[in-house]
Image (cartoon, rainbow, N blue to C red; front, top):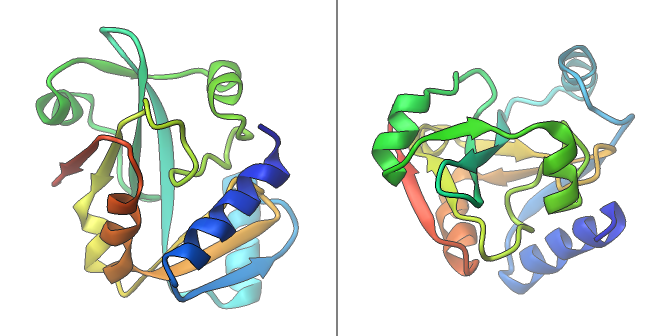
Amino acid sequence: MNISTLYNNNVKLFETLNLDYRSYKHEPILDYETDLKVSKELGWTAAPSKSLFLKRKSGGYCVFVTHKENRFDQKKIRDVIGERVSICNNEEMATITGCIPGALCPFVLDTSIPIILDVSLLDHKEVMFTPADPSYTFIVESDSLVSVFESLNNEMYFYAN
C-alpha cells in the first residue's frame, strides 16, 4: 500500500467514526529536530505520540503506541503480551506496513498486527500522530483514542507505565 492510500484510509476511518480531528500540512517530519521545529512554528500543545514496530519472538509483529518521550521497556511489553519482543528494523517495518520509517501510523495496520496502547496517552487532553504521510499531523482528543482503537479489528493490549 502506498503512503497516499494509507493517509486516505486514516481520513476515511475518522470520517466513518465522525471523529473531530485537526489536520496540519507541513514539511515532512522524519526526525526529532524537524519535529521540534514544526511543533514550535505551529504552536502545537498536544502530546506527541510515537509508534514502534516490534517483532514478536513467536513470529509476527505488534505496534507499541506511546508518548514520544516515553522509553521502550522490553520487560514491561513482555509482561503485557506474554512474550519477548524486539524493535523491528526500518526495512522490514516498511515492507510489512507500507509506512515510511518515522511515520508509522497505528490506525491503518493489517488486522493481524496487535496494538499495544500506552494508557499514559489518555492523561493528555489531545494527542498528535502522523497519519502515515510525514507531511501531515493529525491531532485528536485523547478521550476518543480508545474508541478509535476499538473500531479496528486488531487485537488490543493496554500498557501502564
